[in-house]
Image 1 (cartoon, helix red, strand yellow):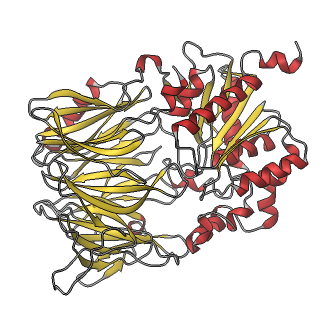
Image 2 (image 1 turned 30 degrees about the vertical axis):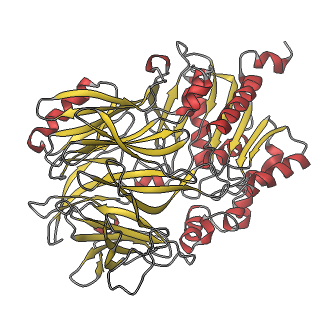
Image 3 (image 1 turned 60 degrees about the vertical axis):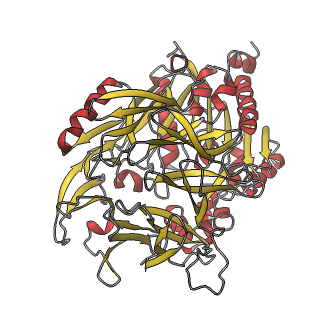
Length: 631
């Protein structure tokens, strides 16, 4: 498929139905900007839209009543191409009228002598936590201040969606967290982290908050509520184990385990379309799975029927009408970024609405395969393989370690995997130790192992693919972004005979610099994170930094970075390039002025992947081995 088609952003990025089912709201990309389009269902036609123009665009959005939507405002900061969410909210009707900033720095109105309350400017990030069913005029939000001290605590407000006037409900008990309700405006819990970056959970009392002290429940995250029984559902992050879903008695005295999986954490909750009560869980051990512990008045068997109808894909509902009669179903998979369908829950009829990327033909995209192997110390390491079409043996391979390191790869549509496999390369993605989604024991196994056992897992995965006959030992390159960029250089340092080239993309190259530059070190919690995950020992940091081990990098290198990167400042790349020049090492560079932590614009991505594919073709493409040996 043409590279230009693969680097394009999805046109349709979200579809949701209004509470009474009269309209759809569609977030789409138009002329490079995110906007919101409203459509009536009968007949299907556009009734209005929201487009800010300039530096502001539409982020996520929520129907509050059948005529009005609240949308997040995302903005392009300074020279940065990628829009950022600063937590401002904008409300508008489905016909495009009565648009108004209702929260954020631009929401303030001038006060006169009148006693009538006005909307106020707020320098904070708002998270919509409750649309308050039955109340068509207000929403409830939890805020996180922009304060430079990183210690200011947020607050909970009720906000009028027509006037922007707000009423304070309460303050939050800790920093960096949010409040949780029962879905009807009653506060139940709040979370946050202390200065040591340790997670804390609080329960709402009649006055104030009380910290949960139960050793199991204190690591819980609220995910749902049963309005009939008053029971709360929590996902527990259990030490040394995978996550567990539990149901907590209304008085908090006891809880009942509902679900756990031996291999994987819980990646999402399946809710009842009307009551919003949790019915099941989404899982992702290798391929996506679902498990129901409650049949939900027939919803569970209907969901299973949909899953069977869309066999080989992931399915999830984006929204339902308030009576549960209609819903919007998203269908997506390794060869499908996302299609949206209108589902009639009574007649069981499913109608196609929109495709997120209609120019991508699933028949021309390459499938992703899940496999696994066992590490030398007994950990199950999951991998994903994307093969070029009709080829499975002795292929040039690109190893792509994910960022984080506390994240993970999933089975699904992956732009990088498609770009590389479409051009003849086997793509190997590795969920190494320290990745999320496989339990606390797997997560903590990566602690202080950035340059050691994590790198061993990545190298073992590459050798596993070679031993399986998938990859050609003489044509292997490693390419990753952020922590993946760190690994792209650290792995060849640790295993110099494994790779023929390496590509570092917005990578961390000096661990000591993380204590000095970037947004992690600006707060106590960030320093605590670095101390826990890395160490403060200077010898350790140098021994595990690519910058101080460039003498071991005897292979072609390609270093890519954005000058506006706040997470991993461009100084990482600059320091590395200066050292490589002193060492007379072979290196190709691409430093882009208006990009941050990962390129956003299609033009810059086209340039990146054009140069990247040329680099790969030169060093591990067809004929590369012969060119190296002079045959």
